[in-house]
Amino acid sequence: MDKESKLPFTSHLDELRKRLIACFIAVGIGFVASYFFKEALFDILMSPLKTALRPGDTLIFTSLPEAFFTYLKVAFLSGLFLSAPVILYQFWMFVSPGLYKKERRLLIPIVILSSFFFVGGALFGYFIVFPFGFKFFLGFATELIRPMPSMREYLAFASKLLIAFGLVFELPLVIIFFVRLGLVSIDFLKRNRKYALLIFFAGAAILTPPDVVTQVMMAAPLMALYEISIIGAKLFANKKPEEKKTNEKKPDEKKPGEKKSE
Image 1 (tube, rainbow, N blue to C red):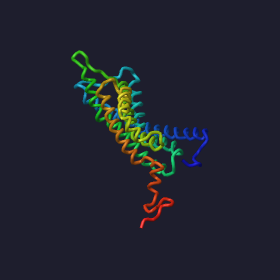
Image 2 (image 1 turned 180 degrees about the vertical axis):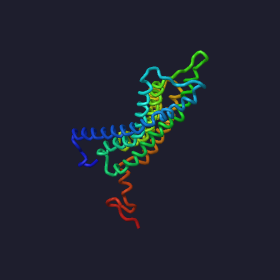
Image 3 (image 1 turned 45 degrees about the horizontal axis):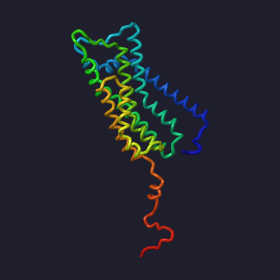
Image 4 (image 1 turned 90 degrees about the horizontal axis):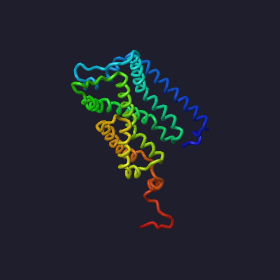
């Protein structure tokens, strides 16, 4: 950490305000651009549900302004995903003063990887989790009980899962970052796999609907990402002081008082 990078608390608040304003502007631009395609975007978002619905079943809206506000929320959700690289960039730039110069060089790759994992998590939820989850819930329909999901309810359900999967897929970067800062160690991660598994299932139970299938489909990738995090931490973790000294020591370097072997 550089001495010149240390700022007073008020400067940190001012920096945070600037970063948040930049994020809001990016989301606003994404929202305006997405609003022109709101119907097409909602149709794409609804595609996994349409394949699970029975022929003749459709979505409904139960109040006059519901469709209008649903389209607004769809445009906002799309704007959020479009501006994800900007938001992640602003976040890492905000924490960059606490990093060494050599670590700041990794910010651009970190932003790219953060965006990749966030979008990848959302796509995993859309293509893998949604079809299985919708079939499970709609499987309770009978001849007397027909599903009639509303636009508002479906959007709230879908957006919650998409954002949740996008965020939890950031796990490798978060763990590697904590290891770099020395907050956790690789040995600590290895010893506490069973507790991590418990936390993942508990978090999946909170973030997903109350069914076992969806919870497992979130917890299982998290365990895989946890193992990837350990591998990544080994590659990018700071070397211990004694390891650095060992690497810096020359092969022919002798201890004080040691005679040179003939």
